[in-house]
Image (cartoon, rainbow, N blue to C red; front, top):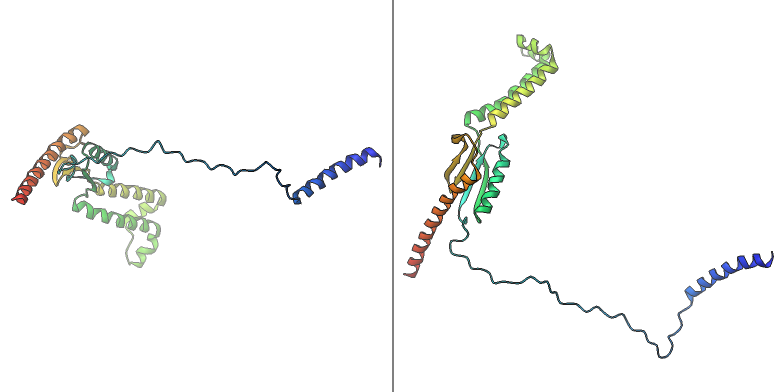
Length: 231
């Protein structure tokens, strides 16, 4: 091996071992006149963006314009009227701060509710008869009716038609088509009577009168109670 090869091999080995040796050798002491100082701690700056505190405003004894009033919106849930009810609710809460808006389902009349419970039973009975009628009727000692043979001729079409028709009938029986608005228990607007939805401006004007009347009555009652307390 000539000198060039020795130099090429030995120099990297020398640098490698010198680096390893430096890892285990402690650092030399600092020279005289040279001192190390710890890193200065950051000085906290005052928060210049603190929110300003204002004294709370005193409210009158009556409170916000809608305080103490309750508006009930009874609507048909199966008619997909919930979106309209939520829109009216948000409008009223923004127009009458402090008002309590309650959403509820307006049920259909009692006969429709009873028929709505019977329809699923009839639906299940027809489908079971189509699928297993040839075993059910003989065990009951009955002769299969003529409609059974006509339905059994095409089971898939008969089952699909029965399913769609009974679901449509049940949806019709569960719907009331109502969108009734009450203010403090008093009817303000009725979709069953008007056959339409209320407009936002129309409903706001109707409720303004009711809310103003309720505030006037509460103001009188509060004044009477105050005078009685003073006396």
